[in-house]
Length: 261
Image (cartoon, rainbow, N blue to C red; front, side, top):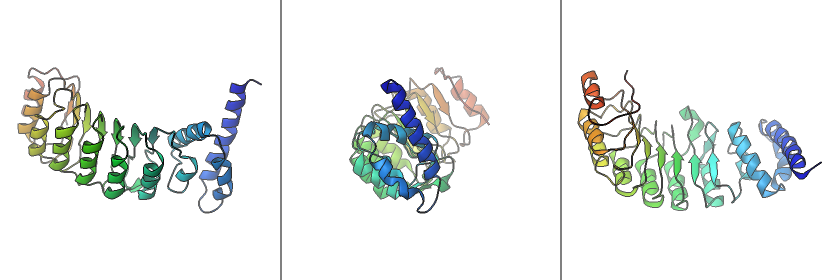
């Protein structure tokens, strides 16, 4: 048997064991912790990625597989709290992609301070998803803007406490920002008008501000005029009327995507 087939067979066995044991609550799966601790780093990294995809990584088991070689972490729809954030912050110093989002808020019990610490030590992040992290506050995005200056994609939909302060920090510092989702936040015309004149205005290609009740046609028009490379612009659920929406669509910009309710 060649080394690759042997590796694939070993991975399959370990994966089945891990999925089986990690599904149990309580102490049963903990009997196997030495097995996972003693795996080679390359195998642990691959196993960690596969278990993340199956949404079985949680506060209870993340510590057994995470290691410093991991640069891309997706805990989307995994149960997580500040414990997981602290484990990531203390273990992984070269993160480039971080997904802590979830479809439902009740899978996220992450507060602001551990995230601030995480971003202070993760300057290489280019992709960040905090969807439905409802306890995230403006100080978190301030930390992102100050420390992750090369960030390109930020998903903040459902971060209910975020305000114009967050948008202004991004507009001041993140000159490489291409995609931004601020849907279901507290941002208003004030922050978005500031964003339209910020350092990322010329490179922004996708902006979603759906269901932001404090946004009107004022900032939408300014964004459409100033963000010359904006191709996907979605703003349903704002205070813009149907006639306003078509007015923006028919302006000089050639938007590839938009949504109308």
